[in-house]
Length: 222
View (cartoon, rainbow, N blue to C red):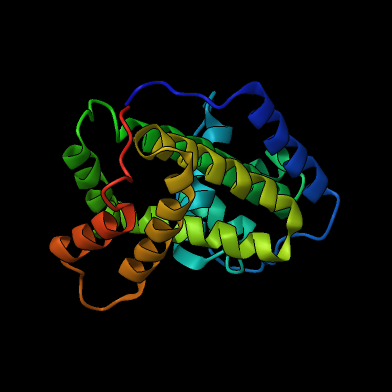
């Protein structure tokens, strides 16, 4: 995967969100769990990043409402005090974790289309994106947790908007701007359906829906 970073403006917006929410109502969560960290990483220069990744794992497993300092510490394998040392509140921890998630997902999403040069290849990438797999399931759950949290915390909508803008810009390289928003909405709905349904949807069904949404004029030259 190529090393793709957000623009300085995007990073600044993400940090602004974290600062704003750190001084407002915290995202629901409690640190009353009796869980204890399994182990401690000492002299780890990347400890803050490990904690953020562990926070995403915790949110994926327990949801935003079930994420606590102690559960994150268990996932990260660090002392509880290390969490509160790096993050002044649970709200700040969760917002910075979601900021990292959006940055990573935007880069990963862009990389999915590397080498795509034909309409058929483009459609197959989208089918792969929709048809469920364990890795994509986790990513989808985190994405929907972010959107749900943004409903209750308007500051998080900066992150959801950055993510939406990034994904639509990538799609627009293949479809043109007029079709990108419609296709993006279709993909969001299909991914949610894939996460919630008990029987996996077929690749053929997903492909047909995407092709019909695009229409004969829906694919632009890259």
